[in-house]
Image (cartoon, rainbow, N blue to C red; front, side):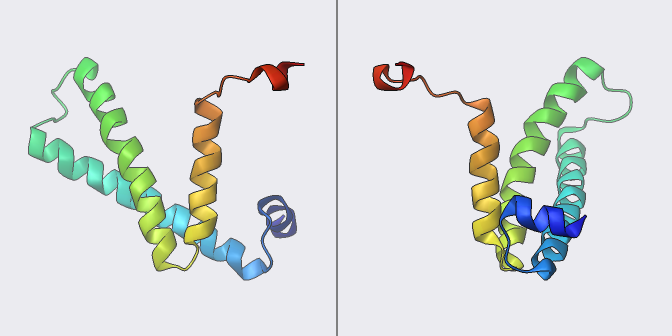
Amino acid sequence: MLERLRIRWGLKYKWQIIIILIVFSITGSMAVYVRKVVFDLLGIDADTSLWIKIPMYVITIIPAYQILLLVIGFAFGQFKFFYNFQKKSFGRFIRKKKSPEEIV
């Protein structure tokens, strides 16, 4: 399994996979912590309507996760991987218009 990830992600060493998985884990935990802090500051609690909580969750978690992924990836020496990972992820959401040369 680790070998397939190494090949898929274009990594040289197996230890990089372990570092990357650790970064993903830490980033997810930190993003949830950031959400908790933001919700506490805004006074959003269990009694708050889902119509408010869900959009606020998306507004806080997505940017926090993206920023933390780069920061923590940098701290673990894998900034280039995570920067390229985010570019690829955002590329799936943002479709570029094809130029006339590409259509033909």
